[in-house]
Image (cartoon, rainbow, N blue to C red):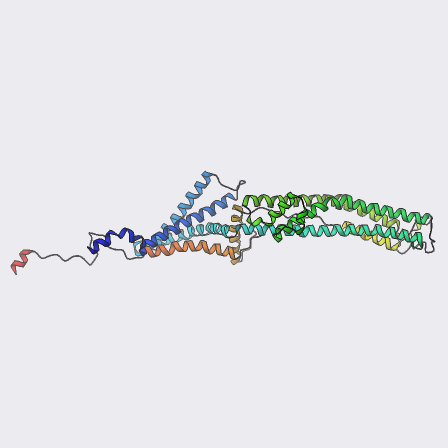
Length: 439
């Protein structure tokens, strides 16, 4: 009765036996391997499409391929650990194909696990790097424009001050050391020169610097909101649309992928527009304004052939004034205008999703190649960091789980089938009645 009772509840206790639990765990690892490998493989294929996603038919082919590969890996592993029941050459072939299929599953499984662990962070870090580089370029351009504006303004201001000094005190010209204050050709020339210098400074500010000033400030606020993860303190004074964009940039890590893609792309496009506008204005105005400043400097400059002497060709001009200080100031302002560099907008490719998986996959290949001293250049500056290593470990752990459970299940001693005696343990033949009676 006791044995019959145990058999009655065997359907309930069998799943919790070591063999039942090992079978359940093996099935779980098998399904996890199929899922991770399939999704990683699908992402790698989708990254090469314009839409960034596969059709239903392509997904079905990818899923079937993954199922066949993982199943073949498990079959090869079974033959590998089968022991004496399998010929040695079959085990050798099984080992080769197991390694091939295991590399397949580990590689694509790594891509899946990495995307889940660090895909979004990688995209944000990449965009922050791009936007930080752009911020540096904007800052350099801003500094150069401000220096040029200041140098031009200071030259115009100095010209006005020198004209005032000539009118009140005289003796501001090196070629007229004894000039007297008051009305005269020299004083009128000085004030006319100061007006031209001031007008030129106004043109530089209105035609070159002002058109990009507002756009530059707006882009700088966007960069600060993204990098510092908080809208600028002055954002309350801005219009509602820009304030909403700054708030989105500050909370970019919490936005859905599609919305984050749109946001990053729009900011990068605005940066490209700014760079294009700034470069066009630089090409149009830098040389022209610098030449005009140089011409002004020549009007109050020395003899071109002998820098330490007045220009002999203008000795008969009563308005000619050789002003060493103003000449050097104007030449310095011209050099500042020519020194303004072009703005470089770094390229940006939104790598979240399938493209991030592809970047991680080729980053793994570069890392493995680097271990053997092979130099490879990837598409992106992917760094194999601690999260990438953790994703690789997770992918390897899935395959190790399959290996361990397969070995445990295939090397367990097997019970003899019912109705058949085990070798060397046959039942004794009962004696016949005739032999007993003969004794």
